[in-house]
Length: 353
Ligand code: NAD
Ligand code: ZN
Figure (cartoon, rainbow, N blue to C red):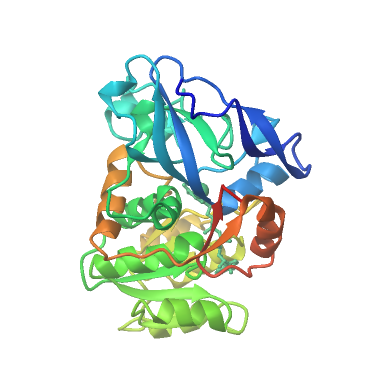
């Protein structure tokens, strides 16, 4: 490896599930076959990182763990065969998927997140809350050269996830999409990708700051889930014919959003579950689900093409991440703010401080 690559680098390490995160020096590894070493400059903080650390999901991360899966940096070393995908100096992004087998039915069909051998940054593999990270070259996403790395980082999970979820909703321009959690990391990008696709948006979240942010994207209405007494009626009333939106992307961190979405959707409406609140269930009465023909189509991140497309749209200036930059050492405070719903848009960590 080049002499400029340090022996050790700074990382945010959690020793155990439910434990604290400490900034420590860790050894910089050499990339193996098919892998690259990326010098990371920025990483977004996704609510998933908090779930992984707390351990409130039925699936559990491997510990000790370096979390994070919205990384942006440049390639500084190539393992054997990795030059098929990237060259030294290329700007790349690290997303949720570290690797997949690229050979099974799921990978062949472009549903690689469902590959049974998929590995994930910040969950089964060390992630992006560190200055240098190893990743599988095949899944690292090229970042368009015009897109600054800090502005690109949150697109690697939040962006690609909602871009894909809107595809799954499969609406026509002019139709109405409800976005629940609209002022959060995923939600504020969903508002923009939906508007870029010609959809009308009913944004659901809480507080003046998030309302202002959503309004700036030209949403048709903002419904405050904490202040509104009858949220279902308010969302229906905000749709053009009063029957409710054609689809809902639920990117909320609270479980109640799912119950409400099934109620406010119009007949034949599509619920796209994206947010993963712990202990949440989707209950559908069989009679009414048939009578109203509502559908549930869950969406799990996106594939390599989705990632490239979502970055391309941002590079064209149609979508802009709303973010504040903080230091790596501020990660515990970021999690606290996230739990209390105090973050409008995304927090991006500057990994140099
Ligand atoms: P975030 O904390 O940035 O945003 C969540 C938003 O939901 C906040 O603005 C909050 O105010 C809002 N909210 C909470 N309860 C609500 C309710 N009842 N109704 C409407 N809004 C409500 O979180 P994020 O990083 O955007 O992630 C959101 C969720 O999506 C997390 O559970 C995360 O794990 C999940 N996620 C899923 C995928 C996937 O592939 N399906 C990918 C990334 C993240
Ligand atoms: Zn994420």
